[in-house]
Image: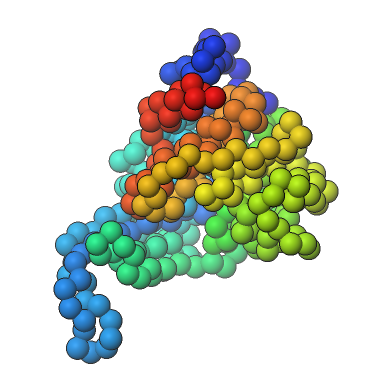
Length: 341
């Protein structure tokens, strides 16, 4: 069920320029693993006398929304309305996480607090704009039966209360999207005629049966199919056919890193990226899947979704760290791309 935008001009004009009001009426339910992306920034001036490792003189510390929470932030910066459902720990970082949501104007009402889990924190130590080391503090075990029941109740309650136009699964294999949770939510989506978008990970890769849009990256799909994978159009069409055979999805979109994005729409096509100065690839997948989900709910065609998502993913790669897409810049770059065609 794509959102009805009868009062919103969501069509492109003759130059392919998107209306400013695109996405504004879209409500997106994001379900998946959330985390804090923590950045410790400093300067390296010497090697430790205790071991052959650099000593980082700490200058600043910053916490950012990560995982499915960064997807929610991308949805919001695109102009749509995110509803985030996930599980965090009843710990100090859990409080920091909810504060970060509040600062961005994203509700934490559907965030479940568990006294048996830690809030996932990925700490990156950086110097001279380069990663020195990353530390992961997390629990990756599946939700308990009690946590699962409470979590699914929260989601169904939200679906009863809000008109949701698309459900986005953001899977990082941290235990929230276990098999039973995936199946129950997809069943609810089918019953309510709500399209679904998936950014999968390896553990439950093939559990997303009958979803609308399935968006793996090339490395993920290469690890899952029983044949060699490359970036040729013929191979990617073969991959898309295999995926459809396995899960019965409607559309496949595969991100190809610097090669662009493949979709199986209109017989299959690769949309190349534009040249950019890459600072950091972190968060690119979040920007792509967020744009794809909001575009799908808005009734855009798959080719147009792929073009927009391609630009969105490239845009965030030009900035250091996990950052959301800028709708204004996306519109500007899309306009330029359409003029050049």
